[in-house]
Length: 192
Image (cartoon, rainbow, N blue to C red):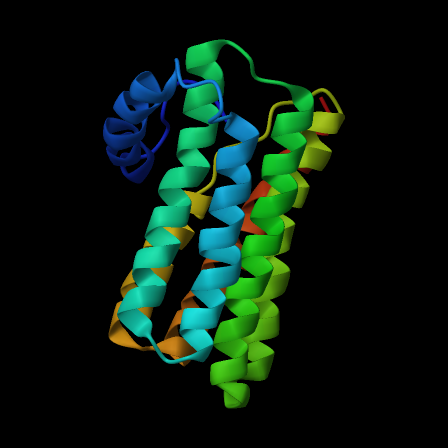
């Protein structure tokens, strides 16, 4: 993630996570990777459990806390000047698992929306995959309108409302449109 927040939700998150990182910078037993794992536990294990249990508000809170922890790990690494490629990879991989388990829990709760849910799963994996593939060519990836912060806010609102099928539909549309947008721009960039 870049050091300068790119979107309004990320800027709002940073108002919370950067000061917390400043407080944690000298507590050596709290590590960026430890926070990454905590994010995975909160959002990727407890969040889906709450969805399956029908605890919508709890699930929304857990997803939100997980998102803050996901931001905090990078902020702490930057504050300590100890960021590593391994940490970036761990963060990216666990983010994909978190997304998968949350969407899988939503599908579990609304089996009638299986196809829409599968489309949401596909789009959710393609957005970061296209970014990684574009950057692997040495080109920068284009920012898109379906960032993880936006998807998390959509999740929180949809979970609070209990609108699982609508939530899956919105995620499917946004993530796949974002993936198509990234693909189009990536192919233009690599041709130059």
